[in-house]
Length: 164
Image 1 (cartoon, rainbow, N blue to C red):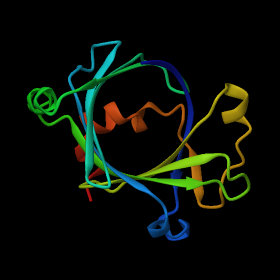
Image 2 (cartoon, one colour):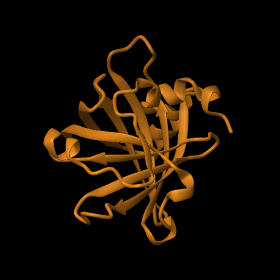
Image 3 (spheres, rainbow, N blue to C red):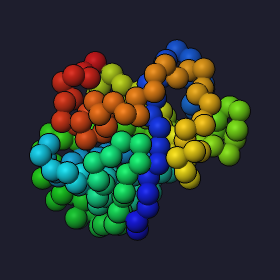
Image 4 (cartoon, rainbow, N blue to C red):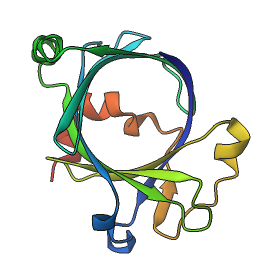
């Protein structure tokens, strides 16, 4: 499935995050098959929701706020083989879907990374105007949308920079 991903990403103040236990969560494992020299990001991903696991192969271009994305569902066997090919370029995180405090129609995705000291929040909108006019929550520290250090691919390539 093709889509144009339009999003903003923020660092957050962990002590001000709302109570996440009341929101749905997704356990994500994501590995990268592409290298730092590729313009196309190729990754495999598992998403576990309520003990149901789905697997994907995802292709993305090299943008930041606006990116083209193609997503294919794959089998568990295809995922298991592909994730091994990722080597150590793998991230694990729990994603919480939280409604925006001032507009419940806007769903924020809070990612708490396992094994590294990083929590970010993303908002994916329908248009550039939609994401640009998002009112930051009080618990947002900094807009990191254009900071390539915080792209998941770069996090996976530089895990040692984020170690706990």
